[in-house]
Every structure is written in structure tokens, then in C-alpha cells.
Amino acid sequence: MRTDAWRAAAAAGLLLLLLAGCREQGTPAIPAGRIARVDARVRSLRALVPDRCRAGVLFQPLPKGEAGLLVLGTGLKRSDTVLWNGHPLKTTFGHSRLLTAAVPPERFASPGPVEVTVEDTLDRSSAKLSARFEILP
Image 1: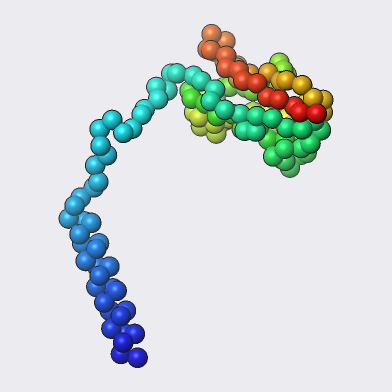
Image 2 (image 1 turned 180 degrees about the vertical axis):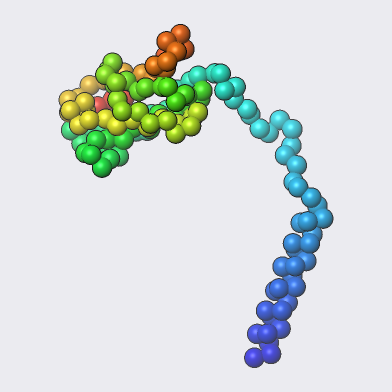
């Protein structure tokens, strides 16, 4: 019984020493050149998740029977809309690097390539972004 109490006390003491040592070192510094900042004005489309599916097979199911598409990029805006072969999709802004779109099942019923485009509906002069989605047979 005494051994267990001694071990618990020793562990607590060691923890206190470790915490005190961390506090004395201060906030850790991040080495220069290790952080890459992306200019918020730069717009790019980095990835679609998923970027392909089988014809007629629901991917990332949403509550209303639609499929969820994640659009990852930089410089994305609240006023952006995702288009599926030119047809606007219900788009939700996550943050400057994430949009989500609800794809109705009829849009991925047939195999073939799909052009996914991101357009700023308030600023038509803003760069349009596009990527390819593949519907497999």
C-alpha cells in the first residue's frame, strides 16, 4: 500500500517539475521561414473531395438525399457559388479555404467528366476557379 502511495506522490512531483521547467522556458518560438502564409487575395482551387464517383452511387450523403462535395482552395468568399457543368449548386461557405456544395442525384447519374466551377456571384471580375470531377461507369 505504501509503495502505491509513494509512486503516486513521485509521479505528481515529477509532473510539477516538468510543468515548472516548461514555464521557465517561455513560449516556444517558431523558427523563421517555417510558416508559409497565403495571401488572402490569391484565389485558387486546390482539390475536390471526392474528385470522382461511380454513376448513380451517392457519395458523402446529405440529409435530403443529395451528395456532399467539399471544395478546398484559397481566397474563397461567402459570395462564391459552386457550379456543376454550369448549374449552380446550393453552396455553403466554411471559411476562406473551404466551400461545401450539395449535388442532386440526377447530376451524377450518368458517367462522364464534369466541370466544377467556383464563381463569385457579387464580383464578376473575380477569377473563376475550375476543376474536373469524373463520374465513372
